[in-house]
Image (cartoon, rainbow, N blue to C red; front, top):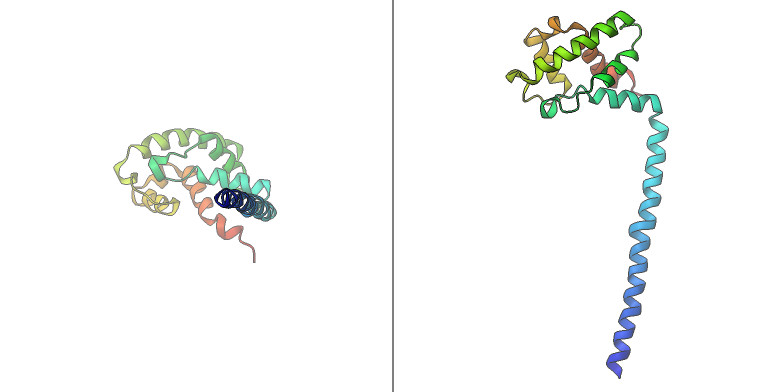
Length: 150
């Protein structure tokens, strides 16, 4: 009979542990996640977030897997002083040719970031072939400096 009492005691103790475990792993975890999300939302407004998503489309990793022409066109529209309406139309054509040319080029296959992409474009004179794409790339490179806050 004593063994049965001990077994029942263990079950209720274990149920209490699960409740405490649940509290710390789930309820407290969610509260901390909510605070972090709130902090991120206060630092990155909708425009900045959209800008960063568009910027990611320039990444050369995994054979330019993230490339998205529509988002890159949207990125250009954030710079109306640098891209006229005619430039944006030409950029669309350049982006189509650019991605076909760059994806299948051995020189551009193992790049680690947009800074290496910019360097490789200059080294292979692709900055002259795709000047508007290169302009977009250079604007993307200065973006972290231009948007930095104290």
